[in-house]
Length: 443
Ligand code: NAD
Ligand code: G6P
Ligand code: MN
Image (cartoon, rainbow, N blue to C red; front, side, top):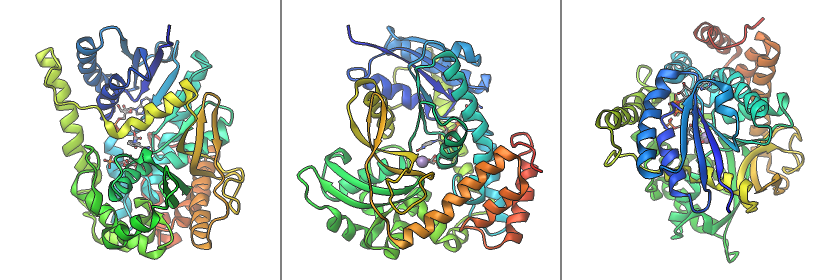
């Protein structure tokens, strides 16, 4: 009989959980599931999502055992995969990450600049704790982590749990590759093979071919030069709001800086921080947009299901955008040797870059984990930017481990989004106050 898997979703109360559950149901043929459990440290938030998913699962897949809990032993015993998407501090803290830097005319963003550093200082402990639970109760399980800020979380796990079975992955390159496939008339990114190097939310494509080996870069570059990614908005239900559409269009200017490569959208925060600040509202940031839209919609639909007692016509859709998570689980479960971008220790894959850096590069994934695909030497422009940014990430993790104010001040000062050590200190001091329930004490 074919093996069936037990999956625990950590961050059960996440806005992404219902979409992931439906996605898992859609892929039963290649990734069969016997058990789904939700784990969260916020019982009330999780319960709303869990009760709705329980009704949905009973209707659509009664054979799958389902449970939800805040107890680590129950959550992590008899598990094959942990899908980890937690947000330590919830959107209320994301709002502060975004608004505090903006007060000082510095980029206010979830994963970039001081906001990303602040979020990192909250996430490290949460993700390590879940990893430890998983290893204690299911030592053979794999964690697929996409909790943000993935770059900082990945560096923290490299430093603190170097032998753990955790794979860090991000969906931004996937979304952008879908757009590129769209530009050249391919039906899926899976018809392309790519070369890519960088850090998470900080990378570039340097090679894109179709399966016959034809170079697709010239055609994609034409689109990038004309309209960035705005030519090819995809048909998924994520990244559809105005702020994202502007980000896809702004990639045109990011591309112009190095027309030899295709940039990740997140580079705009580092290369055009003045533009970003000018186009931000200090009183209404992305966190507000998400709280007013995605969070309300998801929790509204959950309450509706619970009230009606049925999930028929509930409006939830499988999160097609997140199919990469099933691909990753399948690659490990079935040794598919699929090529995927992962965030892994460099160890020479980018030849002229820090061997210990957590880099985002293509890897071949199978039952025993990943093998890196060598990307060779990178140009001075990218190397310089990446050295600065990886130092920000490493200093943040060192600050968390050592409880060092000094190192966190250095990290914020070093971010390309921050104009001076003085501004860095002002932002840091406000962030410390705002994060006193979450950060280690800094001396
Ligand atoms: P959310 O706030 O809706 O959900 C997060 C859940 O995590 C909450 O229910 C919260 O209670 C729970 N949580 C917080 N700390 C916890 C802890 N220590 N232990 C257990 N549970 C904890 O957030 P969301 O917007 O749905 O996003 C979830 C995460 O996924 C975020 O980190 C987000 O940045 C990330 N994300 C990553 C990608 C990617 O490409 N890497 C894509 C989308 C979302
Ligand atoms: C992209 C990134 C994720 C990030 C998300 C934010 O998908 O890859 O890492 O969490 O965007 O989206 P949001 O809708 O929460 O602003
Ligand atoms: Mn990401």
